Image (cartoon, rainbow, N blue to C red; front, side, top):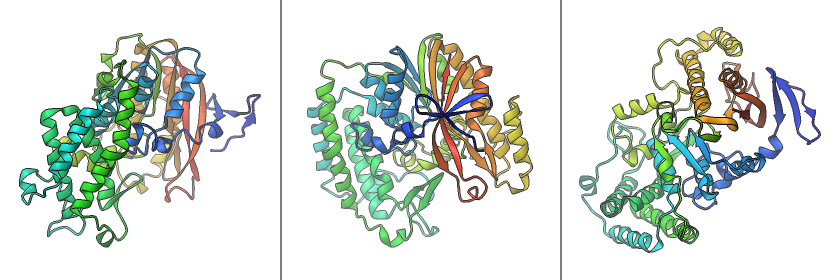
Amino acid sequence: MLHDFVQTTSGDMETTISGYKLVDYTEQYKSIMQFNKNKKVHIHQWYPFVEGYSKEFIESILSEIDYKPELVLEPFSGSGTTPLEMQNMGIKCVSFEVSPFMHLLSTVKMRNDYKLKEYNQYLNIIINDLKEYKSNIRDLMPIPFGRTVVQNEKLKKWNFNDDIMDGILDIKLAISIIDKKDNKYANLFRIALASILLEASNLFRNGKCLSYRKNWQINNTLSRSDIHLIFISKLEGLFLEDIKLIEENFKNDLSSNYELCFFGDVRSEIDRIPDDSVDLIITSPPYLNSRDYTDIYMLELKVLDLVKNYNELIYLRKKTLRSHVQIKYENIEALDIPLLKDCLNKLLEKEELFWNSDILNMIKAYFIDLNQLFSSFKTKMKKNKFIYFNVANSAYFGVEILVDEIVCHIAEKQGFEVIEIRKARNLKTSSQQSKQIESLRESVIVMKS
């Protein structure tokens, strides 16, 4: 859908869609709405999180509101950018995360009680343990669950070559020794291991899933000792430097949002927060793009033993926001929002093209979940405070789902005032959609309680 923008006195371009002000923020947001800027930033650099936004985005929000928040809410912690940046500014932030890997990542990054002497002590234990190969490593440390993790006679493709998996198991065994002494540092080392898994595997992240690299059979020549060296290099490099900075910066201040990051589904856990206590929400929920984050981060979930069998995997998928079709949905009644129903009716006309029969129910369920969230937000927030809600529109079979506009209708029905929709950037559509819809709008919706 195209709109004619007009220039305001501030230099931004704006128009109106569905009765809401749409402001072109692509210039302001083009370099801060992606995690890429965090790749070389203290602590954030421990693990590259593709889907996140940068710390500068958080800073831009705090610079434009006219109050210092006392309690911030981040319903979808992800890699922990929002709570970590709030912590650095001395602001309390309650966060929630349903993925055991993302929760581990967030909490490890938020701890500020690491000590250089202790870190080096445990690092030396790991280095010494990895000097000697254990021929029975697979007896000492079992292979993670999953039929495609390592090669067997029935497979044409597998995630890790045998030598590489043995190197990973060596590291896991060494970390288990640390775990008996200090779980805090063991978890830190687990994140360091997680940060090298994709590089060590035969896979790459291909949008919505993991795919095999081209010519992976001959191109992946890493050895068991290579894996050890890559891991130790991470620990002796950026991790060590950041531990030094943490100890220097937090000698006298141990305030942390670590204990305010809760493991679980925000939809069922949000009552941990007192009513009328939140004065800022910054979040980016999963987009309505059929992307199942349990699939995208399956290597980390399996190798770190955070998901140990298929029943646990199914349980986790059922706890996530309903933005994918990896689980079967019941027949769902859509919210009474004309714009949503119009999108659904257009999609229904393309039903014979559906690659999954649950697409319509997924879309309905997604907005029901967001409606539940906004109902909770209204109870938890103080009056006249702000929400910054980052979403993206989606498309199926040439039909654009106007997510940002539908979210505005949901928020208004729950009693929020929509200030504006900020167009952050244009996202490329898939090859199947590009002939009909060239790009999709990613937005930041600004609302007031």
